Image (cartoon, rainbow, N blue to C red; front, side, top):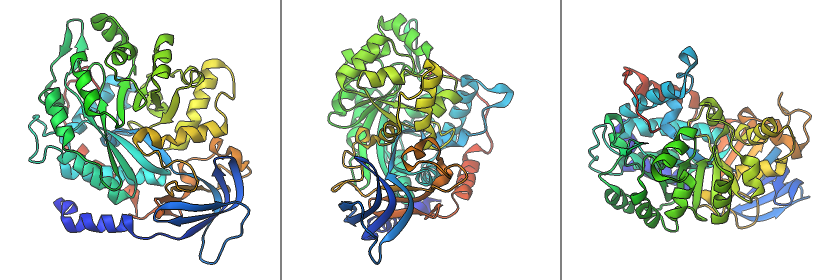
Length: 469
């Protein structure tokens, strides 16, 4: 399997990503910044839109897209290896703890080779769902015993190669993970199965992080795993290392996290981050499910964003977050598929509104245009030049089939309330076709997933868990 990593294969991937794509697309319906428009001609050069013209007939040679065309989707929160857990954690009802034990078991079995193969298939699955950029919250750094690989960032390199092979852009959110949890007496050491997640202190993490650099199709960002896994004294170092780059953090995913933080530090996780200057315009708080009103105000005042992951939050019984209150406060909301209980950004977007209906008894907090804005979180991943169909923007497109059994008869302007991943027909990334006719350029992605998952689930080991996810 190491052949995936040789220079010839890497250069072949880079050539495929950078090869010239079609010069123009024509869309029967396209969602432009002003809303749905008909008969839109989209001219592309060097991976960007150079002209967007509604009400125009297709020209000879244009690639015709007869469906509803949207900007590419941003998946702002992913743990690629969690995909191996889908459909494997529900025995006897399943709990967060049984899920977590299974997660640690999978993490123990990853190598740079197997992670490359798994992530490549997972990112291809995302492309089939309309994702054109993914934020990978990456914390499986070292060997299982915690010793670094010869290249200390070998696992991150595997993820970068996997995304290039799958045809999507990547923001690698290299995660600081120093402690095994937080109790009444303070932070506890990493346990045996967490050692590969941690570095030898925050300075060692910062040194390893500094060795990472942007490249074509890749942005480097940082992440604070959580206030349980990164002690308060280490937070300023992470903030300084991430200066000007995306900084993501798991926040208030479960009530226990809040309770532990208040008991030890005397403040909520949000307030702890605020005091460390870890909340700011480049920060994205992930989940933010159990916030106080003061927390919502602090996040809004800092200009931070929140990544909601509804299908994971419901799968793990974490709860329904305060999306309506956050939106009302002016917080930028984006989406992630997190543990990939399903990879369907359309369902994630729809779930934000439907969860709000369940929580409030009201419809219409998030209109169709708001759902599209949720899907367009590229800016929170360091790609401000993507997420809209407009001149100068990256030429990312997703075509939805308006005549499937799910979408037939829908208003094109309301298709986000009806469509799902099976309705994605075409995906274009930086002007390059990655999905055509519902088929990924790598071929049978289901087979790729099955093989990759089998390689990390065979000979599973039963072990006991600890506190930090």
